Amino acid sequence: MKYFKFILFLLLMVGCNSDDVSDKKESSSSEYKVDQRELTIEDERYISLLKEQKFDIIINETKELDTSNELKDYYYLASAFKKEEEIKQGIPDDVHLDDDAFEQIRYGIIIDSLAKVRFVPDELKESVNTLLDFAIEKEDFYTEKYDYKRKRSANEELQKKADQRTENPNGVQIGMTKEEVLTDGWGRPIDVNKTTTANGTREQWVYDDNNYLYFEDDVLTTIQN
Image (cartoon, rainbow, N blue to C red):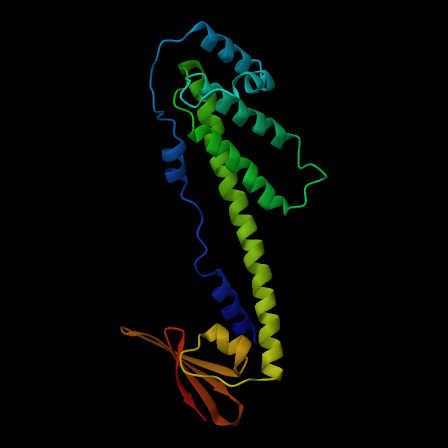
């Protein structure tokens, strides 16, 4: 029985992929669209405000700027750093989301904000790149946790359906997947014989009263009564 629970778990977990960190960093990247430009008095002021963590002032003054305006970069930078500050304060009580999903979204917002930045002054690059690296690491961490919980919950539901079907089996037909046989067909077998060759994987599922099902690469190909 433990073996079949493991089969069910694998059926749910197959295909689970985490985001590639290097791809995210390339798209959000420390290699910004503009390496250098001459700083204006307004640039210097916003740089000072960022260092002083006066993010709301920057956001209020730049949120209506057109995206073609060079100062719009400070809106995205301030938004990213403000989101980091919000995360440090914990999850608000009025949030009705899974904690891991909520944190995944919040770190994703930081990454998305920094992806829109075209130019970062040299004196801010270290702090911006540190924030980007941290946000990517955390988003991947919470994505993996949330995906695991979601798939585990689905796996528990699948196991429940398989238990019910084993007690009250339905018919099966060629072309069904193993999951469909477990939840919609004969339910759990009493034994499994597995053969792996160069041509693929073949399984024989053994049921009571000399009934057998044969699968090739997880698809039902033969029914023997």
